[in-house]
Image 1 (cartoon, helix red, strand yellow):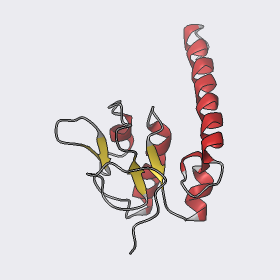
Image 2: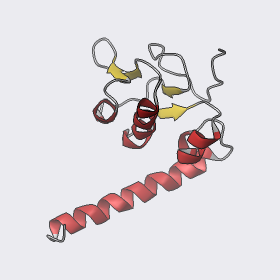
Image 3: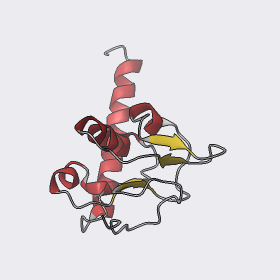
Image 4: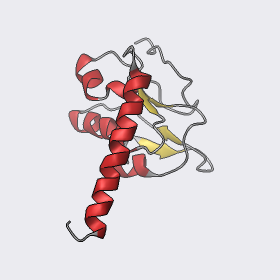
Length: 126
């Protein structure tokens, strides 16, 4: 199988395939490891996360998609062309024409949802 065309350079230690982390973008938040411990690992010295393997089961695919939303710095990407996956994560799909614009919209949406959630916790509503 041919390597997918990636818009950004993947970390060189990441497993080949559709899901990848952009090289030198990881800020070691640890969130991807929490949602997909079977797919995500640390590099030697824990300076970046990497995809240690690509999803092979439906459960692992769900974890991979969850990584995209969990990573705090938007450094995880999808370079494949599966329309189902692309429709679920359009902001992070290299094949979607206006993914940067969608990513900005998604970022601000998550930002304001987080603020609303924190306000409800602080006010005792949650």
